[in-house]
Image (cartoon, rainbow, N blue to C red; front, side):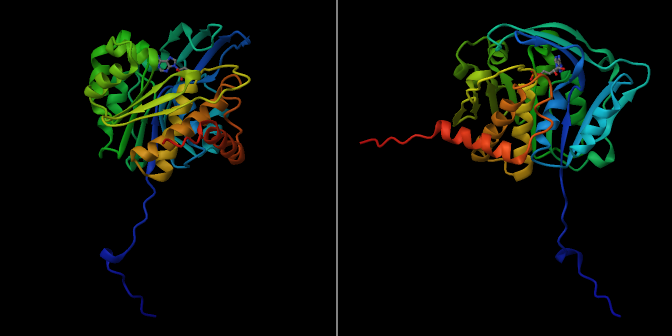
Length: 323
Ligand code: AMP
């Protein structure tokens, strides 16, 4: 039999590029007006990765936990298509712990405790199998660790999205500013946007943040929706009016996970597609808040997600004939 060789130049090479998610994997203790939990699984990367896993299956996690972290949760990551080769498990050390208490409006909360534990000497390792990273989600983490991950990728990803929080503005301002200048999309909530810029108006705050480096800015406003800015355009998506909001923890990370998951699935980084990403992110966040922790997020069906996205479409659709 003669086997004809196909010249390399005419071979189609299919590469499945990946979404790398970096951030905390944690224990949380949460208090809301509706109840209180002891230690439950949380962490920014846990929420972002889980939400993204409904859109794309090639997700790679970079994080660290102690040996007090349950193996079942790592197994759950695998079930969701999340690779944990870059998740370090530190013997004899404790997992990052965060505790928060929500006020009656559920839009504001106090951090009661942040124990960095394993994060204190975390040195992120990027396995070779992660070097195909096309999309990078830098979920909430110390800015210098977010920076290390970006530096340790051999090739700049197609889109780098970063989330952060007031804690890092108060403790690591300079590195945070440097990181913000390096990313494509920054996501912050409204109070963080104001804290970053000293501007009350979110439009003025957005203008200042876009001058700091990112090409796109997403401002999350909790139950009041989210705004997407670039230098020329603005888009607004409402949050779904929900009957029951039980626990807002992780809503922001879930939003970011839905957003980047959709972008990674479609591989389209246009403003128009980011608008759709905002709707998917908002839909995922609306599930997250319905129960404590990850409870509602881990067992969703495609039908439930589609139905919720449809509710968003119906919510904002109107017809006006201007004369
Ligand atoms: P969110 O409600 O979206 O702000 O995210 C809450 C999650 O972020 C919780 O599950 C916490 O474990 C995690 N978290 C809290 N504080 C920090 C921090 N300083 N850095 C990274 N992750 C944090």
